[in-house]
Length: 294
Image (cartoon, rainbow, N blue to C red):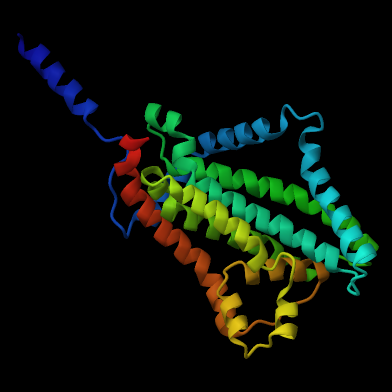
């Protein structure tokens, strides 16, 4: 065998054994993950378009469902709480609608990220794209759907004589906070779901139960009125990372500023950051090892 043939065989073996997803340090993991997303923007956009088309392309009304579904929910809430239950607060159906839209985005991103490796196992085994791009594209898809769904709140604002104000700056920040929290927390358990499929079932239960223990059907102000700020129940509730963002979303529409204790506000601001940092480290450290189990 000639030297050229031996050298060619050696090069082929060297490249065939090269890992698709390089190992990174814990310190550089958050930056590496962002770098991977930034360098694959074209792929990310196409995955988002694919997800949106799969969801609405074959539907008769298409993207109209992003408005129609929350509008139908709003009608149900109005009949249930205002007409049947005779709720004294006229804004209550809008509060519930905003809570449902916000929580739905959070739950779908969380569950989608936990299942991102198993759902996209076919593409992961055939390509060397960064594996985090699949969960992030699903998160962006849910973000787009949520933004479109929020337009259904406009008729409520006209009916309740509410006009846009400077407090709307809280709306994008709160939605982004929910998205990062759900995505980062999902990254922590995405690899575990490959090894232990029960993880996905656990998180489906958590998000269903979380609907009731999160400010969807109730508000921050109701908890203060019923339990009081000195109650242990109030402290437990405020450890839920979605309480502050969902409350801020409601107040941003109403044109008011919520009154939070400094600790709760700092906790709500730091939780998404730590979720992302821890999630990126665990995901990049473990996802390479579970690829063979897909």
